Length: 394
Image (cartoon, rainbow, N blue to C red; front, side):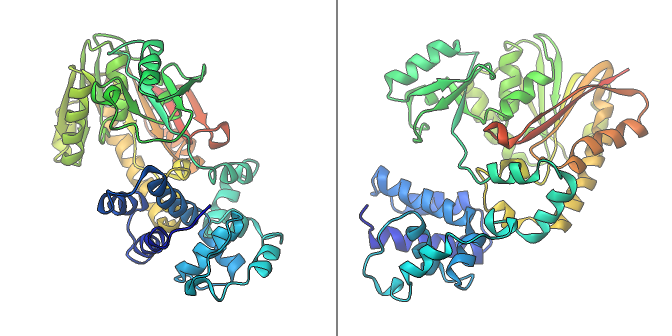
């Protein structure tokens, strides 16, 4: 593989912005690619995938290279040797001893270094998931697959898969997921005619389990109270066959703007958006919902495959704060469920303290609710990590 200096410089600059300016990796990479629109697909893929991989293995690469945290050329060189790519004769790599590094890659390192995570996160994971932690954190260092959700409002999965094939987008069906199409090869699908026609959304297979878990039916009144940009809202609309009413709510109005655009493209006509301005917004919806989805803010530990920079931005203090917010949302928003109605509490975390323990605490304080079912999608199953609990109001 031939290495180009301009692409290597782009990787180094992007890494510097992510770590020193504390910016989100996906946004920085997106901006870098936009600023270099003349790059070909291979060049863009090299910059994006190399940057993500160095972010993912940041601690491990530092340990192997003995470099400083901010020596991004050394990190890039170490990564290239790890991937068995010959270093070019550039000044930036002149202090790197290839043979010495190759020997260091064969050494045994403690788990937090080997799996490239902060010590505090390893301690927390080991404490909460003693029998699963090593397996799960290892799987979270694998690159996430790109999964599409075939939009049942526009056709069945076979028809949509065939149309994608005609556009050169090859996918595989996984029988565990009703509408999931897994890309055989990573590519930009957003420019395709199928996307513009609303035939699919990009949505991880684990995420696709949550809307069906709510057991919606056509004609119901459903509230999605932490809707964000609406991936699960759109899935609910398809499951309801566009019949009934979905009230999509969020504290961030701009996310609801994006949801409206996506709903129009998807042909989802039964969605009404409502910004949560204060506690009165929730009180006005009291006992109005047949079903309520609470996909609450969380640590995001279940989605480190696609957001590897999150492990460097997270802190124990943040997780403590988000658990308080989860309890508050579950307690306050559950009032929207009708007697006999049901809610789903879900997170993209794998920590019991954000999942089962939150549900147990809620049920202990709210005797009019009972747990009907709960489920996990573990990262080691191959996709993102999610937890979901189905709770009924008696």
